[in-house]
Image (cartoon, rainbow, N blue to C red; front, side):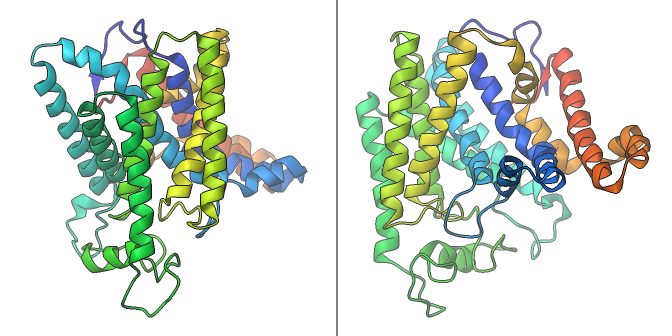
Length: 374
């Protein structure tokens, strides 16, 4: 944690990026439960449909909840080009930036292990793969690629090269141990085989491999690099409305490519398939274009404050939900009200209360200008 004084909103800081990051984290701080309950209570088709989107697809396919993780990694990538020039300008320059890149990657991996009960020191039941670990590794390698390439064209070569190379690994290899001929199944894919062969401790979350395993990090680097390419484009001197147009076109093209690639390499979050990278990458770009248009171009910003508060402390709320939890505070504040209404509504009140308590916690940190920076 650090106090940033009065320097919350730097001149070149995109408010839309903070709002989008907060919008992303909003769905894992309890909001998904609110909409699941609303769908069940009201029976409205739109809410029922959205409630159905608030869970992960078991294997092949895509639902909105599968978007949260890659969108966060994408946003982390978008932020990087904005910070590069600042870090290069301080004492130490490029060497200091490299130290920051490696340090951040290592800290995120360590926090991911701690998040998965790493401090219990029970090696057999410990899980070494994690959401934060994948973000740390993918962002770190993407940043190294970004720093060691000359222009956006060479970075695009890296992006497509990573995705094609990753796909070729599945085409060439399959799991040799369980006799499943389907190279994209839970048992038969090479990624799961590597996880159950190499990774110590326990695996999560589908029995035959880990959904944040080793091999998909290759494709996840592509997600981070796509964010950096997008951030580099947003920093350009192109007129804002043209940026929105070009981003929208790029997002739609990526979704189309993802759907075509899906015919050969299924969209799959657990495998972080190349088609998944394209599909969620396109959706991420479209979401960013929309937030950028509304918040930074049209200057409709007041509505976004709720999400900005979350987006300024995303790692904090992610860890707090695991380490602290807000259940007792929620029961203390909202439990009495929940007992006054029918059972069908009491769970909804508690769910709304849980999100409210979490947001107020972040708002207190925001007002004190305290932000967890990694």
